[in-house]
Amino acid sequence: AADISALRHSGRRVPVRRTRTHEDEHTSPPASVGPAAAAFSSAAAVQPPLRAIMSDVDGTLVHYERDFARHGVRLVSLDEEARTATVAGPDGDVRSCRLLPSSTMGPAVISDRTVELVEALRRDHGVLFCVVTAARRSTAERRLPSLPPCDAVASEGGSRIVVDGALDLEHARTFEGVCGPMDRDDVGEGTRPEPLWVYYRRLRDGVPGLKLDADDYFGMFRASALGDEATEEALQRMIQPSELPEGVSVNSNLGKIDFFPTRAGKANAVRHLLKRFGIDRSETACLFDDDNDLQMAEECGNARMLPSLTSHSVRKAAEENPGWYLPRTIGQGVFATEECLEVLLERLASERRREEDVETLMGEVDGALLPRGNPASSEAASEK
Image 1 (cartoon, rainbow, N blue to C red):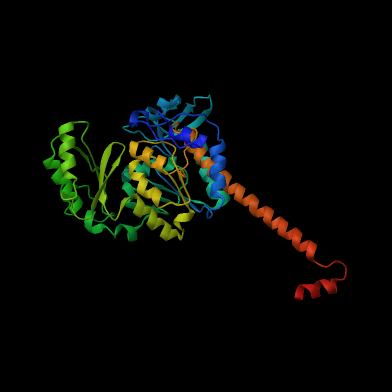
Image 2: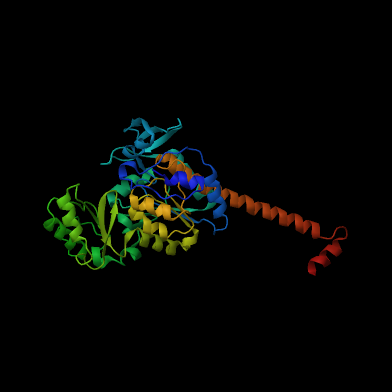
């Protein structure tokens, strides 16, 4: 089957010949950053400067053994007590990693190199780094110490935004009437009166076999049919526009269905953060991989980068958008994430070198134009 990454790097446009599943979504081309990265940096040279990065977490910054193992990346060692791990790529490259708190999807890692690259983008170039994830509040809080330093964390699919340790109430109040206040502590999704939770109970009572998850969620909940066709059909009937409460939207993520206030969601969270920080979408890059990230990516006009492709719809969107960056190591977990960040870092470094070269040249021109000899004539020339 034609592979988008290979096509992108060869410069040819050939349609994908078959629909891939989550089981074989990624590719594993050579690991080096080659012509595509150079072409991406060259094309980006005419864009506004990069001032912010919005990044998904699962499948983008954080990677699971069950996914990257399909593409030749091995989990070499794991120390649960020290919360560390080591992975090896198909070409023998080895990375030390941080092991994130236990997950139902198996071991999850983020490389130390990924953290270092984000730190360099923030420290050396003043780029803001924000993560936008569907993770519940408790999961986001447990994971935060393992992630790179963040200027903002948007969890619960964009419903809960935290900046400098404080909940962004301005954002939360725009959809409070749909899900209730985001700063409450009650865990009673079975009794909450707002439309989102009334609908939750409708699904619970009306779709036999449906697995619902609202544990420590306040601005969204999740549903899964667990592969049962009858349950899936019943769920599809319940998520038709005529059945959804006003102000409630749905999206798919990692094989599950997320329900959240329409005024929340990842895209709205990104819009709010850009407004809060005074940054234009043209100055913002996005790292992402899944269906629920597509609208968020549209809010980021500077660069769109995919360390992995986790669904047919994302693969199709990538094929239709040749300006999106697909790394050579796509699907190879931490190696693909590092490659994306390295491309951004090199682009910023190149821009800085060009600026320094221009300043040097202008200084030389000014020096050549100044009259030599009599200081008084130099002063007179300056006055003119």
